[in-house]
Amino acid sequence: MLELALPVLPSKLSPILLCSLLAACASAPIIAPPLPSANPASAPVAVISPTPSPIPSPPVITPPPVVVVAPPPALKSISQLEAQALLNKLLPAKISERNGWRNDLLDGFTALKIPYTPEYFCAVMAVIEQESSWQGDPPVPGLGKIVWKQVEEKAGKYHIPLIAVQTALLKSSPNGKSYKERIDKLQTEAQMNAVFEDLASDAKRLSLPFNMSNPIRTGGPMQVSVEFAEGHVRAWPYPYARRGSVRSEVFSRKGGVYFGTAILLQYPAPYSKMIYRFADFNAGRYASRNAAFQAALNKLTNDSMDLDGDLLRYENGNPSRQSSGTEKALQSMGKRLNLSHEEIRRDLRLEKLSGFGQTPLYQRLFTLAGNMPREALPQIDLKSPKITRKLTTEWFAKRVDGRYQTCLSRAPAAF
Image 1 (cartoon, rainbow, N blue to C red):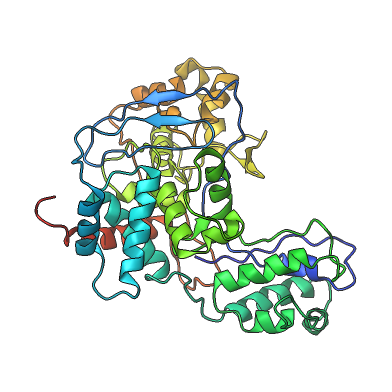
Image 2: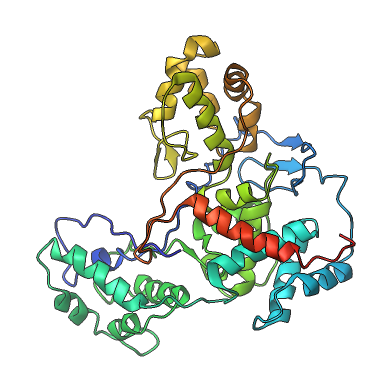
């Protein structure tokens, strides 16, 4: 999903206004905050054996800390050749470049050490189908107009006519076309990313600030976070020859499938059904577990706080000093939980990691709550200039799950 966000402009604008106005155009679905910064003192290497469940957890890489998960022993081991045959059965019959998609899926699973199973293959395929309809670089209808509308709205707040910005963008770009022409003809996010990459490198000639950065945050056939991809390659070597930056790889079909598979499957999730991984893909890792935690907290406090899966407030990807509603509610229960405010905050800081489920806070809360579910679909409204009706994370997860079930119906009986 494409979301164009507009940051606050500085009070003193540059002569041609380009940095402030075009930084308004960003692609950002509802995703988890950036991966936490490394902290060797508090992030030891752990070896975890997943609890058997209908949907077993694949190997994991969650940088940082490094978490090594033993492969579930119950999974059937098949060769790459058998996996290729399985993919031939599972892939939709009428998609373009079918063999290319098959090879990219197989290569990604192999490099990430994800078991070859119909469940895992179909999970990734369902997300691809939902996010891009099997298009490596999916078009976004009216993308150029969306960009200009957002720029115009922001410029209007500073009494700057859009024509002034467009005039500034008549300067030629590295491919010989003007920046204005390229924005006018935008059709895909990859093209949009290329425009901003050129603007960033051309900042000096255009009198732009040197610290201008590309504002597009997600892309590719699975709409993967660029920040996630950049963090992942620091902990798990990227297996393919790179044609440029990690950002560029996200926008390629092969790289997009690789990173999308990683964020969807390469972490241990305590879920009974795949639908909760789909919700996590949209709302952030462990959002479904954390939403169930919030539901249990609501029961104990007779509250009705939103089940959004975020237990802390975040600023620039880091936990804020300001307490969230969830944290305040937990603090009010400190004596019942036998935990201090500092101990509650300590455990909450693990909310994006598997280890949160083993903390005193998590275990004591569910002990007090009694027989409560340990998984729940987060209740989050999705926002984007492309969305004209109410859509939620629950809608996304159920939509993808429907595609997942259809894919599984194509699996050979032997599996």
